[in-house]
Picture 1 (cartoon, rainbow, N blue to C red):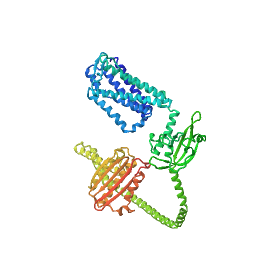
Picture 2 (picture 1 turned 180 degrees about the vertical axis):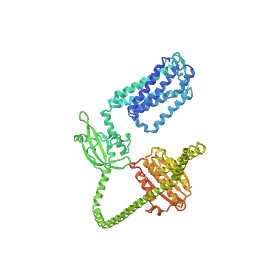
Picture 3 (picture 1 turned 135 degrees about the vertical axis):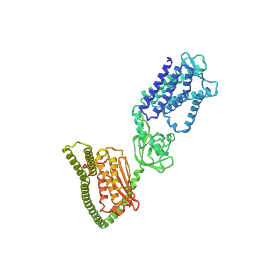
Picture 4 (picture 1 turned 135 degrees about the horizontal axis):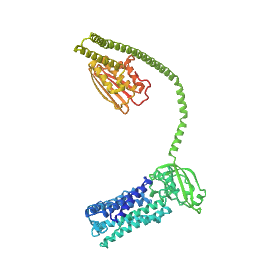
Length: 631
């Protein structure tokens, strides 16, 4: 790598560091954002300069020449940065300002990318490749360098003008260092331009990018030295004034407004330049008594400042569009070190809401007698209300009696179901398991007798042994089936969906009713009692279909969405009526509702005559579950 590439590489690294350092000290600051943008653009220029220096042939140098497009944009960004740094960012609000600056910069960039009219192709030197000679023999080249000179001179003018106009010593110091920073980079640019035009054969390296980064280092030093980022009493006061909700006006002794805060601009509707040097009487409403110090345009300023304070008075602010805003006005005189009056600080607080509240208070006072009369009428209605309360108590008592009756019927139904289950289990044990065990006993007895007689074991004995094994297997299967019907252990083993699939297959086998089941449950660790409740509700729904619906098809949809289980059981049967749903003796439906209630769930039943019945279940999975599992 050429020794000339080192300064360019260092300039690029410094640009990245400086931009990040300043930006992250206060990312919301417009000055910081523009500083980072400008330094990064200059850093890209340094990086392309580094590319020139390390290029080994014309094609590589040409590549770096073609991507060197951010030089003009860095000058434009520098102008924006200086305007923001020196308190001129208000000009950004004017669209014509951006229209004047941005299109020429983009035109310069496009010309440099697409043509050789600004500077020629890269030239190889003993110390590396160099950007081609500046083209002052073309109109585009001359216009480009005139634009570049205007950008540099504009930056210098902004800094010099601010230096001579500001009275803030901190800002004056920043402007002083900034002027030196701009002139140092501009000088290198002039030297490079002269080298290319006057002395084209005298080629020596001019690390313009390093000069740019040195310039921005001086900017950073100015920012650090004069506490741009630090919280000083001045910046604290400025922030407080800028963010306070009350309006603040600085008034000269002659009655002219010299400054106003953001709240004043918003309330009065004037811009910063419109309100400055505006007579303070222009913002005070007509037919309002002025404080005595405002009446003589400064002639009474000395006497007015002797009190050193203006007491609160209620007056009006008059906005740009002639609206009257009621305010509470207070103020204080300002003096210099020689106790010479400098003017006044006026603080106005919008009392529109206060006056509105006072008006409302008067209205409340005016309506007090009416409210008393209304209260009297309310007392007269209390007897009627008591009668209504008595009627409400009767209705609630009736509802309580109905609930108790439903609970009694539910208990009777549970006892009936228990007896039916006991009878069914006894029947299954007797009819199926009893026969299997009897057959097993007969086969075992014959086999034992055969063996005791000492007969040779032959095909007959083997056949009986296989029969015994088959009967034993069927007995085990019967026991497992009866056990699953009592309480499906599959819920604990393989989960809710497979267990319901087993129950559906058993239902189809027993009833020959076609059932379509779609189960989509993502949770694999459902609470045992909750899963049992869902299983029992679907089982009860199928039982009702078999008993009452006269259906030929059933559809079951089971899903889970955002921690809530949804189940829908639809059939094409006769359809349940509203009377049957509301009937207190419908203990099956009541049982389903009571199973869902402890989990925060809900069961709804809807039917349409001749088209079928729909049972809907909504069961949250994230709730305080009961401590005892549902049976």
